[in-house]
Length: 310
Image 1 (cartoon, helix red, strand yellow):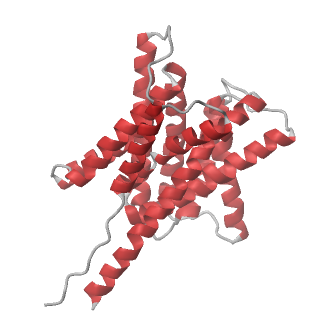
Image 2 (cartoon, one colour):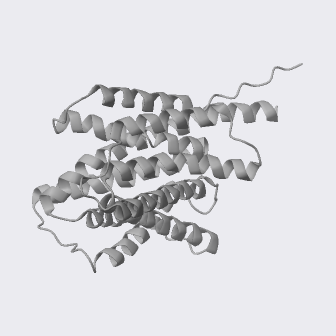
Image 3 (spheres, helix red, strand yellow):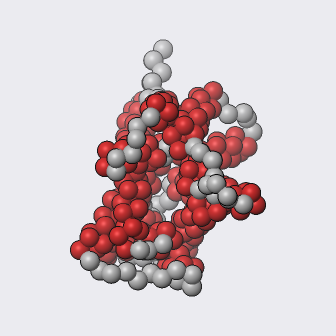
């Protein structure tokens, strides 16, 4: 009886977690368009935009948590989990935008998002002391090829090779930060849940990023209705809501699946750029998008079938 109950729970939990990850990936994709619009409208630098994203997204969730009388935990394991989340998400944002500045958006995106699922599978294989299975490798290959077709491209003309290499290394650090963040968040912990980790962790990460950004780039901007609206959208949907759903889905689907589903972010951003910004749709983009979708579908957890009774 116990075995049958456990199997039923797995059957329901994995697909539901996968659905949360899909919604998170789609919401993340809106961040590219809204973040670019915010930077253009306000004149904020990319690191400044990322700072507002973390600080305000986390801050809004903290206000909701406080309204529910869910205070910051005081036990060491919970505080450690929140602090690690804040440090990793700040490192992820800082190294990604560093890669963009030194290499290019396409190269930084390709290396960051493409390397994260590979790092997760590699770490899991080392821990288990066995090679990755075909079911793990197949969506990775499809996803990386699709991502390369979708966003891949050379560095800008005149880019210094040394700077480009450093940009690639920073993007690889961003991918490793995202992979490690996903693996940490996937571990069950009774003292915290997804909204608490996202809220307090991202607020802490935003403050860290602000301390690093302020000496080099201003955080002030003109508070017009457009700018405030873009900031609010950016903080709520691709940040607070998306990351809460991502952390919640991780608990069921696991980091290997979650980091593959994150490939929906550049796909969604590309679709929105074509629909809203008038970017040209090419055959290469269509093929790349199709491969990304195929990789996400292939990574979907299969329901566990109960063993028939003898």
